[in-house]
Amino acid sequence: MLGEPSQGGPTTPPPAYVPATPPGYPPAPPAVAGPLNFDAVMSSAYSQSAFTFDRSMLKAADGFFAGGDPETRRVVAGLNSITVRNYRARDFARYDGGALAFLDGQLRTAGWRHLVNANAHAGNTTDLWLHFSGGDINNVTVLTRGDRVMNVIAVDCDLRPLDLLHLSGHFGIPKVDENAVMVPAH
Image (cartoon, rainbow, N blue to C red; front, side):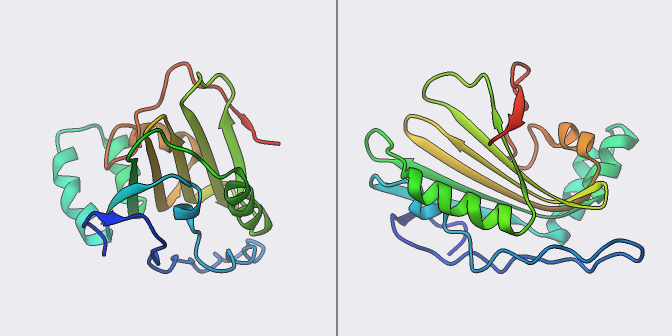
């Protein structure tokens, strides 16, 4: 159940929101076949916690940005939901490269673009998958992997690419690393 810690093992995430294609745009690529199982990526024993900000919670959180700049408020208005899933390894985290490659293949087949941090230091890796509808981003998945912790952040949205910077450090989304250089994964 979301929000409660669980012991390692598969869980079923909520179904993905698939927005309607706006007039004048080509049809969206096919949805990812089946749920994305990030649980399989961490192959060591772990505990897990998760939470979701749905549209009504994000609208309520807009009050926190009332004193903020109009641009940040516009970005928050473009969010439909944010789900954060945290995995904590009991010992040193081990990751299954095959499971990660399988997820990457599912996302790429559905039209997602995969970026990685080109200058990540040992022990910390960030993967970013973006799904576009025309020139706007309608879904984002961020995967961060460290020595003991793995985090998955899924954002359902309607944003311009630069809008992601405004979300940095809010709603469980990691702060943008000033030294990060995101490049295509392959």
